[in-house]
Image 1 (cartoon, rainbow, N blue to C red):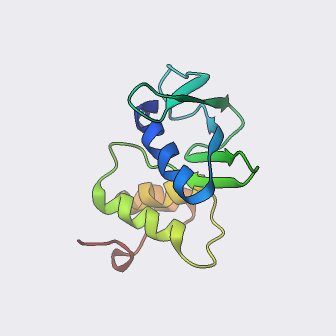
Image 2: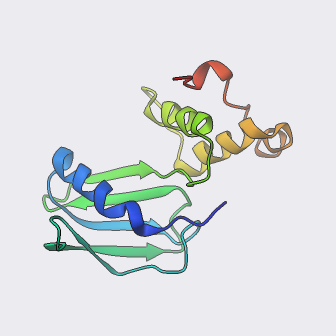
Length: 137
């Protein structure tokens, strides 16, 4: 898996603010992220008018980002590695958004790797993501 940078986090946090209220903390697993792991992140406005606390945990699964709002609402998100093909990223997002889905982030990421490799599908014990589940637009 390629290392992901925290460069896109401010925009993501602002988008989450709109849906879930002011985000105050973001927790991420250390796996899959580059070595620069800031503890605080400036977001909002041109000068970054507020600070969101970031927590990095070796025990959190790869591919999981948890955001907490000021009202303590928790939002779990699947993060897709940046070099994932658009087709595989769409398949992973479709799987994550499927009603009744109970798959955890690592299983969703494993399924997109399995879709790219029949050997990986055999190793994970999960079938590849069907082509019909992949968006083509």
